[in-house]
Amino acid sequence: MSLISNTESEFFGLQFANQLKSIQQSGELLLAHNKSLNTESISKLESEIESKILEKNIPKQVLKKIFFISVESLQNQLIHGQKDDSGTQHNFFILAHTNHSINIITANLISNQSVNKLETQLKKINSFEDAASLKAYYLEHLENNELSEKGGAGLGFITIAMKSGNKIKAVFENINEKYSFFLSEVKINLE
Figure (cartoon, rainbow, N blue to C red):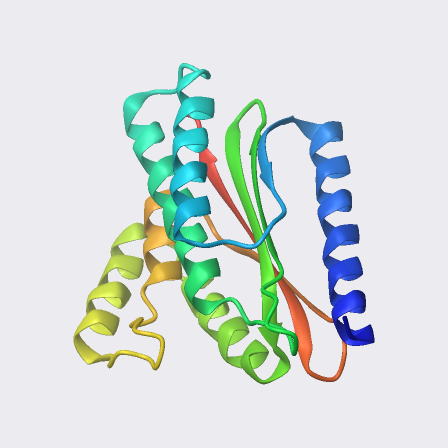
């Protein structure tokens, strides 16, 4: 394993530990996954997510939002997460419960070249003050965008923001000359 891979693995391990510590101070950890993703692991996580949120007696409409955003977030990580030089995809997924919300925290490796574009996209999505404006942006984006090389039309974060009804918190942190850490946190209000 190269020094860069060790550094990326260690960086993600430390970030994951910090997130878990923060959750313990402000809420309850429902689920944490700190391993590579594939279709099989996502399918298993979907079952675990469903089980954990059903235990909380959350209203059905909110349950649907949590499940949708969780699955969309996992798919985004699998499809768009950058692999390091050794072919390893670093990522994690955390589902947490507070008094007022369910928080979905995801992190993955991203190329430094992609940071500005993603940061700009998320700032644009977060700039809308009402649901109608965000929906209009979604429809415009759907009509005018072509598919990316990975098969997406850039709609994932827009739909996540629409479903959650909240802003998407995004953190970008440079790891080295090639890669950065990208963390997103989505809150789904329980009321």
